[in-house]
Length: 246
Picture 1 (tube, rainbow, N blue to C red):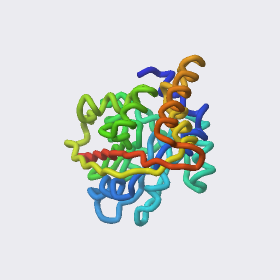
Picture 2 (cartoon, rainbow, N blue to C red):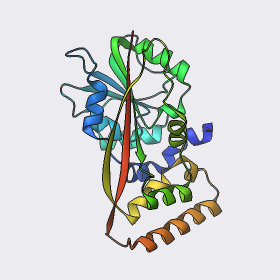
Picture 3 (cartoon, one colour):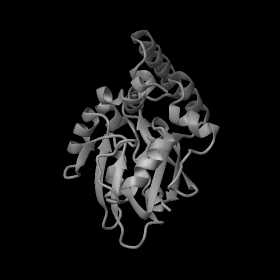
């Protein structure tokens, strides 16, 4: 991964908002299950446009704050999820006081951080007995057309990291527990293009490479008979992890 890729998303904030999927509530609730009773102050780090933020707000008594390194992404979040405090920051440098939250969660983001430094910094702001939660929506490439779509767009850093093994989390957090959920999102040709446009590889690609990706995607969608407002089920596997602060 590169710093350019990690900080590239703001220029495609709208595509990210419309093209990326939401998170299953069951997966988010599972990440928070280990919290002590009544503890619900949560920081969504790497919050982007607020995809995970709005699911967190569905948890009982949740009080959520959003953190992201990109001001353009946070501007979209403030519109999409009004009323949620939002601050510029990173997992390695959080704009939060010591022992100020019960959980820190990251959606589609831990693969961008330095895991040792981030664990230490998150441990600073999470109260003892609190939770670090990590979650990813990964397209299910056991389905042939989805595998072919990934070949066209290139695999993401998240997909590469998770294919190599579980994410690394360090002290002061204990061992990772994990669960997975399988589901599908009905999606149009236009939204598939928006999803591709929101990916860091595509954002930072040359104009020729962007044109090649769009051309090859259109050829695949023509083959699938996906036109206009027609939808196709895009299958996902959501992988969630949680670790408790010692």
